Length: 320
Ligand code: CP
Ligand code: NVA
Image 1: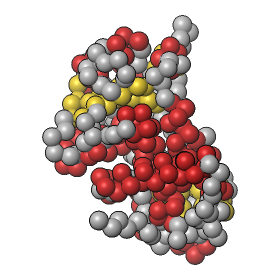
Image 2: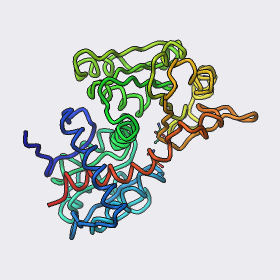
Image 3: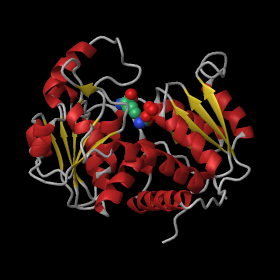
Image 4: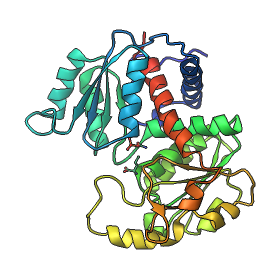
């Protein structure tokens, strides 16, 4: 089957088929190998890519910049205070201007609608580098990390503990079952995923995969090959009302040694998109220091894979 990526945007992985997602993961693995062997093909030679960041970033920004540099493209970082968008100029007008100058845009910000509008009006591929709703480039790196460890995706079980309504929960819930992975979320009832996201995940999932939503963290991780968590307070939520109550509600949902043992499996890995809040004697957080630093914590492979996967996306969507 021939796959066609050229000129497409990537706003969520929901618009991409299982085969297309597999292809992007495989391409990222090839590009990783080529980089290790110092073989650069410059698949993005003479391309210009705009990186719009309304929110801060370490991994996504650096991954996109290095990916561009490695493949011969020019990356232009446009931070919140660097451009007129959303202040003196509408998103629609900004999109049309950038589309005349750039071959692609990576956008990180608040609203999924902004990403969609940039895509609708720029006429060039727009890649979602995180919004309040979805973080698809992260999930591609997660799938790559899982595939590197287990050699496959289908047939594995992934359990997510924590805030079940954030961008990572939405993205993993809709993408992993689609790849044939059983998926469970352990979250307090008020923080369980929105019905429309669960319905979408059920609609997109590969037949036979099981999606479980529970408020029992121990039940959620039973039989899990992968345990995933994310911060309890996402970017832009700090200081908002209800956040202190949310953190209190999540106190029993941290990933600790007991949770890892509760899988009943020996080789369960720990993943986190980062940045992480480490739980230690003084601080509460979503993962204990012990688990974060353990042998089965692959968080830094995952962080590195952000670069190879963003590169694969750029090459597939924007490259010649
Ligand atoms: N995981 C992730 O997106 O990290 P940054 O916020 O540092 O980009
Ligand atoms: N849910 C987190 C993910 C960070 C990569 C946030 O939006 O801040």
